Amino acid sequence: MKISELAKSAHVNVETIRYYERRGLITQPLKPEHGYRDYPETTLERVQFIKRAQELGFTLEEIANLLLLGEDSCLSVQEIAEHKLVNVRAKIADLCRLESVLDNLVAQCKCNPSESSCPIVETLLPKDKK
Image 1 (cartoon, rainbow, N blue to C red):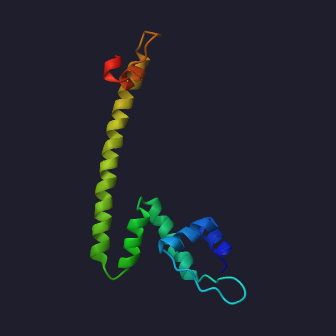
Image 2 (tube, rainbow, N blue to C red; image 1 turned 90 degrees about the vertical axis):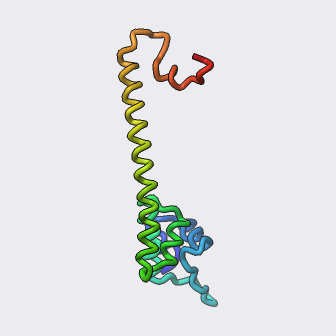
Image 3 (cartoon, rainbow, N blue to C red; image 1 turned 120 degrees about the vertical axis):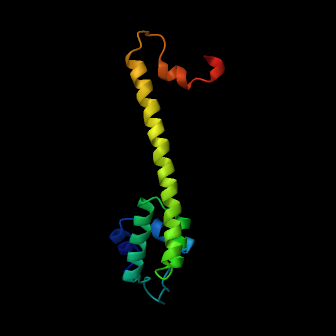
């Protein structure tokens, strides 16, 4: 398939395909003397893998490592996934703390009788401005 067909099938744009080629995530097929490069179905599968991994929060560098390890080294892939899981759990904990703080600030704002000051704004001001 041509690059435009590959991009359309993978739901990305052509520049994404070219970027993945430059990063070494996919291989650019040889260009025939006349005509266009022909990408195999395996390239589509690889682009779809990359996009799914990105949706799960893996960086392109991490994805490149996953692709290098292949299916032969499950333990190494597991280690990368476990590291990512630790990061995800830390982000969830941070988001839970943020949710609690914002919930508290919104509650303070609802109970605020003053029209001239806002607890949310005052909380965000530098300490020396309060």
